[in-house]
View 1 (tube, rainbow, N blue to C red):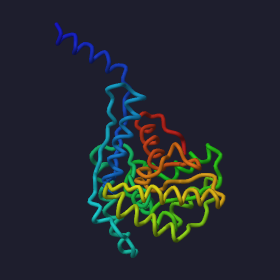
View 2: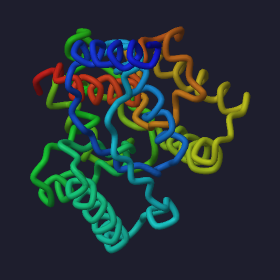
View 3: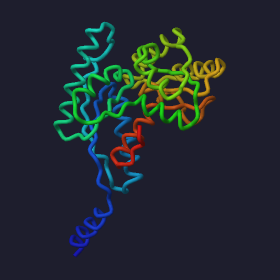
View 4: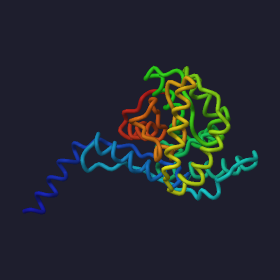
Length: 253
């Protein structure tokens, strides 16, 4: 009788569980942030859908050695082929939408998006929307060198009416070292935490109204919820958007 009751009970519960869409994650850039994506997306879906719900995810964790220290255009072209192949594999495996689990790799977004027939949720697009809704129009962008100095990411925020402070090359060098030499291998130090606090304080003095953490590992050393300025964490925002999409509750772009 107990077994029959249990099966019947589970069947009744499943009727109340919403249908969840399957999301693909191009990950491994780094594995540290991919683990964060998996954890956060599942916690949000569980909270909103049902206590026993798990997010239907297809994750391809790429070998970051193939995608590290890209300098020449031919390096980026090679990286694009790696991400395109990954996107196609995930689509072929049944993913109904994709996310790229790295801010810097959104430099290749257009090429990857053109290679598949399913949507890819652009991280900077949703960061810009979140800032616009919060009424923040002047911010400092913190991330890897290419995110801070190139246009592919900045223009997405500017399109939402966000003015960005120019990058300070001293901070660019410091952040690049912390991100690649420490955070991407799972190393968190007090010195890195102090460096970020100093950078954020200086950005506030320079007139920034908000900080954009445009690196998926930076929340490891920045207190997002208690800081001198409002912090828009791209990882947290991307995970919320991913969960919204899975639950068919996504905000319109």
